[in-house]
Length: 176
Image 1 (cartoon, rainbow, N blue to C red):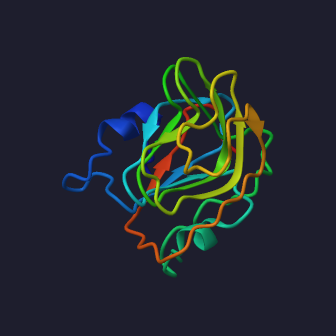
Image 2: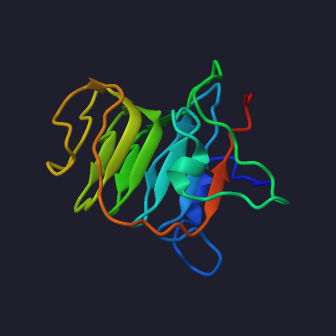
Image 3: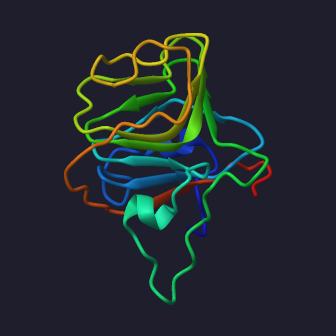
């Protein structure tokens, strides 16, 4: 947690599950930022994309509790004047199977879809706003319909999710 990625592009470049790179079932945390993160983000199966705007704690979302000698997990709750927002010229977020998307805004996907996926399996969505002039979702299995703006969408998923690691993304701009 001491040296997060500075951009989604740097995260996405190694989000391939090879060696010590981000892998399936990893937790990916996005700090609040004064500017939008530039996507796209393509999630591997089981990955959790968690924004600092989530209303539940990071420990509750991820199932991880730091040891007594470990640094504390970042706070959540959206208390900052800044927000977590992703925009892209293509799709904002492309889902694998069994993903979680929690605590952020998916903004304009200018030539794509805000939230897309093929076979999403047990998808969990919480505290998510989609605000785009294009299509909001692509997969009929994503339980949201074709709407342009949606806030605090809730869809439950069932079954265990094994958590492998934490990845942090921090914008180089102001963070609270």
